Image (cartoon, rainbow, N blue to C red):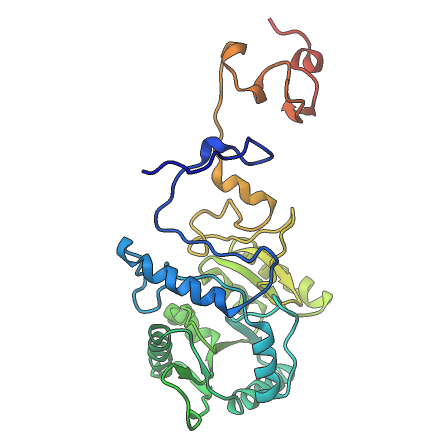
Length: 331
């Protein structure tokens, strides 16, 4: 393993040079000014190709899931395409995503479905990132469309001149009872497709929610009265997702103290932690107890005198005082 060519800076904040080490199999590209640009995507794809010798072929070789690049959504491009194809406006950046949609069987839901069908039928084909992802999407769509429990509400034909990785959006619908019988319908198809699940009442919706695997988010669309009426559903979702939203659209994560971007397995491998927000630091730490250690052998953070002057929890009380001053002289 090679040594650092320059001396790392001293410890500051959460950074400690003791934890520095060389890494193999990781490439990070960043613009310090925060400006978006396709050149970064091109460089990232070249970096990924260069990592292939280390087995960076992904947990899923068809889609590359598990190895790839993480980028921002091209919001300006998507906004222009959405306007041209559908005549509608997208929400602000970071405020839209896809997922399972649960709708009741009533007139307002029927009107929403009818509008969705119209929008999808009038939508144009769009390109996917790679041929592998395109192939996986088409395979998933074909499999779901062949399921006798599923109804295809809208699937526009491919437009003339579409490229080899272009795909059309597809809108599916299934009853709650059939989804309960066939949990495989919960599996994600990565691409422009939506599965609408129609339920009859709050009890059936709660039953569906109990069947779901762990999720990063769960969103409720409704009034205050609706949320109160579906209190049982909220209780179920608390154990199914790391973040619950009302009248919003995920992901829309914000780096703040309250943010939780995680969830029960398989959304994340450890539901106790978040990958976004200040609490994310706890993914990289574990508790260690120093019992009956002499003061000279303790880390500075744990010495009775508190030489660093940090805020500590001593006998259930937060304090910056030395231990003897805070809880009295110990024998």
